[in-house]
Length: 331
Ligand code: UT7
Image 1 (tube, rainbow, N blue to C red):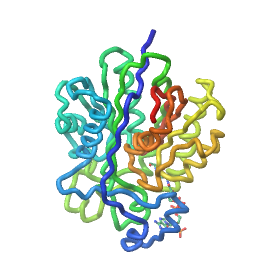
Image 2: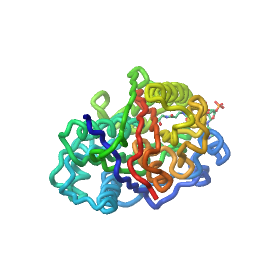
Image 3: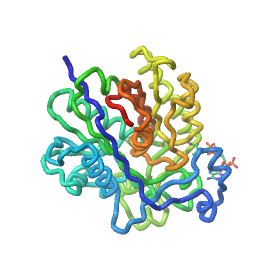
Image 4: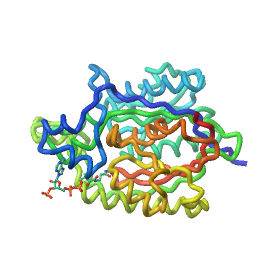
């Protein structure tokens, strides 16, 4: 029988520095009321440690995860890092994180699927466990969004924050674990959410820098519509094919981009908001970090056997949902 992969530990890392809505009021023409009512965000964390990048946040989460789960770094076979803000365009962050966390027997690679990156990485990691190729896999979501945000653009600078989360995957001994995923993609969506320069299409030049093209560009209203549709469709699909209903689904764990998107998706799925994990008010949109940081924040409330659906939407466009039967009591 196919052995499932189960999450057996979670750890998060958030920088200490807090950027509040009132501080943003001093940078751009915005206000606390607009940000709260349009997005649900009250504050976000910003990485200001000199010399630190996304891999350092990832490595902090991984070191904490190894300690918390009593795992030796030498036991890890594979580390996957979801990120859109790797330290460098190449090499990947995953191997840098392994190096910084003292993991020497693993191979690693990054996955770039924007805000769906953690979900895609989680399923990819699970496949390496299910196939028997790996025994212990770490999946990290780490993004240093403030490094690619234009703090003169009010349409994007209020939305994002920095942070990282990591989970340990091991073979499940019972019926718990990662059970099913449904993913979708639509490359035409790249028009609405992208970074204009810095890749092979438009390498960095004085002109691209002067034109502020190395930052996140988003047409929010269009992305909003696609996000609600993509997340609602994939959550519906995964619920249907696994006989999940609003009654037997314990938690929805949504990507934290906008509280209004989360409300719409929960309402379309018929799930009451007290069973939806939310931390957007504290951290904003941390891109690859949102899902593991939600699981970390709510870990103490999770019980073995709980039915969870993780759901995300991001640049690409990429989207999807994953059904997990939770493997341990969090408290
Ligand atoms: O995580 C990856 C995927 N990303 C998402 O899922 C994000 C999806 N989009 C959104 O969350 C929302 O579209 C935003 C929060 C980005 C924007 O909210 P919105 O309700 O869609 O606003 P809008 O872009 O339609 O703008 C409405 C008004 C505009 O003014 P006018 O043209 O009506 O006069 C904007 O200029 O709000 C204005 N506005 C702001 N006002 C104050 C835009 N940003 C701000 C701001 N403060 N920060």
